[in-house]
Length: 398
Image (cartoon, rainbow, N blue to C red; front, side, top):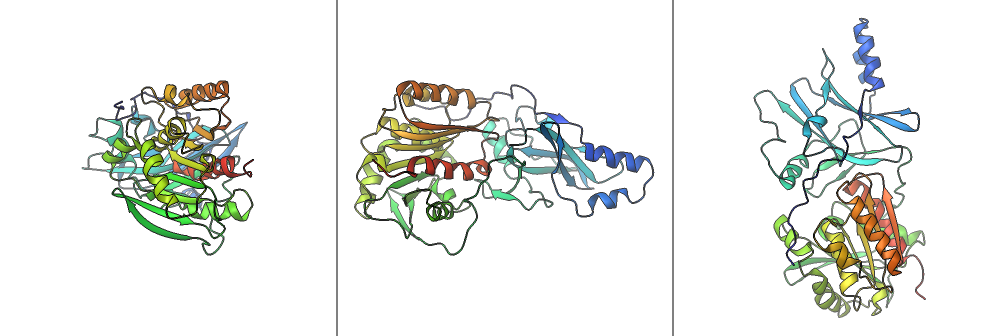
């Protein structure tokens, strides 16, 4: 089967909830009243974004300071609609160097964001690309927020800022707690880099987790730290991690799409290779595939089509827009278990995930299903993967 190579260009079903900012309104009023110190007082100790309660929601005001900018685009993961970028242009407060944009969001929201300023005589960096992937690539190279210390690194290796509202899920297993207790080793299999992490607590016959896009999870998102913390807190049985690196964008699309053949490679090449080198268990129920986006599709398809080798999946924001994927995955055998999550801001993926969830329930496939208030975003996935591992590795096997 040949998979579509890009997501469908579907606009947001409704515009992102852009609103007037109370904080900017107060500053504008002070400036209009002739208060000479209003601007300096506003910036003294300022943090961004400004979060203000508004009934059962929060008004989130993003700030950018740039006197030379002619336009500033605020790219917020899955609030920015690539089909209508004009709604993400920030406004400039007259007579100042302050650019601002505010959204009204539920208090459990989390997202990464960046800024893209355009100066006089420059071409806007978000123009000139006519397809979804190219536009996203341009936006993924934006600038982080100097007023916000919270951040994460995206797949492109660029620092992004992160906003987490007061009721966003706590990501308690992210931060390092000391010296890493396990060890890494690097190997190549069929031209692919496989980084292997063996925690000190791993025992003979223990579980194994195949982690797709392993270059990300062994690099900018340090999954080994999360696993060490989960083990220390008694949340999971210590797994051997097989972190399978992706290649360039084109090859990644080819390998991790629904027609890429990765399920058979994992079952017939990777796992036997690992078993010949490390004392992993032979029970398929102790073998997990974890992935996000295209990797989420591969995790699901491996569990569905190769249950002889893999008995569990962790799928985050799987690219279920690909033709036929939901139908193929819905044939998961009842003996497989897993974790399935999607962001409520992912307007292309939300309904297919709900459909798949209900079909898996009907088929008797045990799984945890989570909808989080966020998007297609490592800022969310880096916490969700811990919950996924807890779901599939959290209890002793019967």
